[in-house]
Image (tube, rainbow, N blue to C red; front, side, top):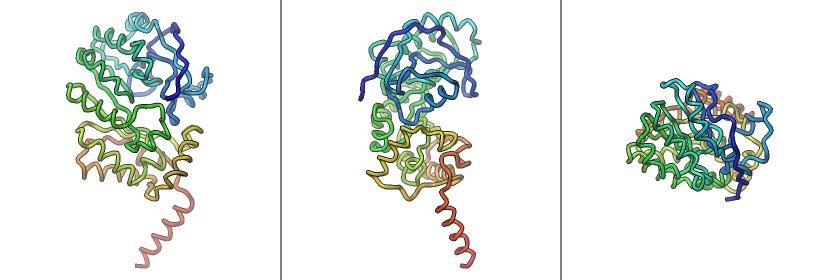
Length: 297
């Protein structure tokens, strides 16, 4: 794992209104993320908003040392029923959390409120805070596991925790009575939009017996250049998976395998709309020929 530059800073605010419907407020203990996953949506989103990052994604982390102080202040404008999402633009349990414990301190402060809290992470470090999570009135954890293929994980998110550790963290949270889901997202073009990738993931998730939420990036073109470079290298090593699916095939195959394995799977509508990748011309031509052959038969 490469080392990110850690800087302590005093932020101006800690809670921001969430523009999407999954939450009312976002809370990010850090700026930047040492995991630096190649497909992360944060860098292109910041670029779209005209925000210049201080360095390549994954190379820096700013620690918001006054986070708890700001949370006490900002909670005055938060309604008791408002939902708070932690970790929408950074991982709240990335390595720096081991020493700075900003996320834990924020959770301890949130114990004084009844607001629903949802934490998104890809780090097993979250199990360290089971004692605090158990005190929260209404808390849930989403463990991000976009693939069950360790080779793909090493290529696309080499600085993140190995998949077995994340699966074990889900089990530990579940056994502790914490509401936990697996966030199977984004669906990775050429990796988890294939028959093999779909089955591999659902077979890995099935023994845990928790809800699995599957979602996709808006368009294949939305994936960043670093992802495309890492994916090309993975293809060079492993070859192309000929079972890749397109359009409605992706969501339908997920549904079919989930029913077979009895997995509680929630699928984003976009996975029935072909939002992960366009069908290549050669595949379209093959489909047309295939239809003509069936008609002849």
